[in-house]
Image (tube, rainbow, N blue to C red):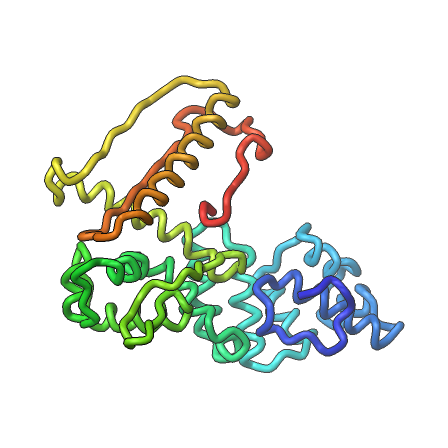
Amino acid sequence: MSSETPLKQPLVFEYENYRVYLRDTYSFQKARSRHFSYRNFSRRAGFSSPNFLKLVIEGERNLSSESIAKFITALRLSKAEGEFFHHLVRFTQARNASERAEGARLILQSKGFQRVYPLKQAEFSYYACWYYIPVRELVSLVDFQEEPQWIAKKVFPAITTSEATQALHDLETLGLLCRDHDGKLRQAQKTVVTGNEVASSSVADYHREMLQKAADSIDTVPRAQREISAACIPVSKATAAKIKTMIQEFRDEILSLAAQDEAPETIYQVNMQLFPISDWQSEQQSDWQTEEGEK
């Protein structure tokens, strides 16, 4: 949402961060009535602190379950809006990736949110369901068959026929798969941008799932068909940053090489990791530029 004063009453279902919703709601109410203030809202909600709303908006205070109920009453939200606001608070205040992912799932279940953002569920599933990406890549194989049963068995480990069917549907919905003039499925050039907060919360789950599958492959995939190696190295922050850049460039080279393969026969997952196993708390964020998709 824009930082400008909203021209209409902010709708809670349009937000992915409850603090932004509260900020816009305050601006809207203030523009409507010069008598509206932080103190006025606090009195309506039953808080002793006159600036509690301001502190919450600025991230200086979190909302407890009791506070959420008071805010719902003061904001005069309907039952559906109140439930969504509660999920939004849980999502925004999540303490770890697991809680954030669960909060995202609850938000996506809201019919109000689905009406405003009909594609968000498909975007979330693209990363939350690890097999969506392999299914998309299967379309490029020379022997690809658009049959859910064939796809389900081709994915390793195997998925269900219904999962394959849903994956195909969502991939087409997102425009990641399309049909040529003969009606055959093919990959589209479009990519999923994970800038929105709800959908991008599933990226961490995807990486965890792929790392687990890499570990599982030690026992399930013959050594000749995999490459898993590791190195423990002492380096300076500057050298570590250079290594990260080298990994990114190597990844791009692999993607370029794969793009030139005119007869792909199978799908491989390539994982590359660089992470500290000694104290890293003094690391400066400026030394490690986070790319979209690594979150």
